[in-house]
View 1 (cartoon, rainbow, N blue to C red):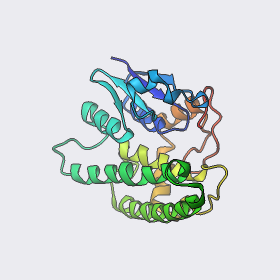
View 2: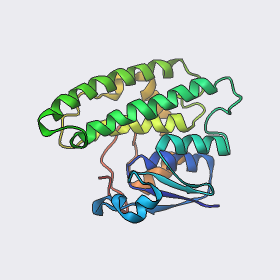
View 3: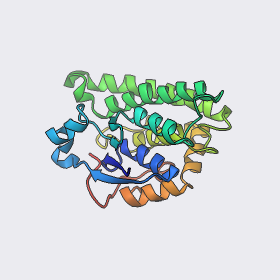
Amino acid sequence: MTYVLHYAPDNASLIVRMALDHRGLPYRTQLVDRASQEQSSAAYRALNPNGLIPTLETPQGPLFETGAILLWLADTHGGLGPDPADPARGDFLKWLFFVANTLHPCLRMLFYPEKYIGTGHQDALRRGLQAQLKQGFATLDTYASQSETWLSGRKPGVLDFYTVALLRWPALYPSDADRSWFTLADYPALQDLCTRIETLPCTAALQKAEGLGDTPFTAPRRPTPPEGSAT
């Protein structure tokens, strides 16, 4: 089967796109037009009841939640993470879930505080989230500095792709708020990871497909996609 990736430019779907391209899996894309709020349409919610991006159509039905899609691809096709019998499996899973369950939700709240709290408290929420993210990135940087496989860029997989995306977005979003709290150079091992991932063919394919520029992770700039919009 050719997978169908429901995506929007510079959304979490880019992580799944990288995994599919890196593994050489057949897929086609279906744009979710955020400008018209297509993610909230009845047709899209029939695939993903939460109205979030991405969704991946598979022989086992539509999958949603970025971490779940990535883990399913890794287990189904191999080569994107350690196999279940691999001694490194536990380490891989705990960091994948840390990225998916801690860092990613923090970024979502940072970018869309109005979805979580009243107007008068949004600045305080952002400050708290920024502190939590800085600590989380520092923790991840320590692990990356010690890893010789997963999260090193030497054996690229879904954990690497997820991480570099989360390092891209705080340099760009939200466009109307202070972003000086985040500097990639503060996390040298993660910066090295971004540099390594930028050399991969799957990154070149992503750059072309979503208009992310020549340095999408080490020096991000706002996307100029051939279709759709990031927000």
